Amino acid sequence: YLTDTKGQADWYERTKDLPANTSAWESGTLADDADLQTFKKQMDTAKSSPSLANWTEITDKVDQAIAKVTQGKASAEDALKTAQSEIEGLVKQ
Image (cartoon, one colour):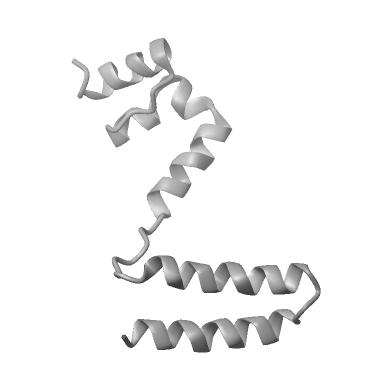
């Protein structure tokens, strides 16, 4: 019951737990709710982050670049070039 389309749609109605069964998104309240359909579209097109041992270091470089731009310490173009260079060095490791 809980894994078929009708069961998942019913379970959503009762608990507001989002269904794992993708066909359940096409029925009932789930299909009629524009916000939920936007979320579904994001799930359908989302990509997971790559599995890299130094992923945290890479995201830190992105965060640092954004901080420099928002604090007025660098232009977006300069911050991007710096981050790209540093990240490419990390990826090659």
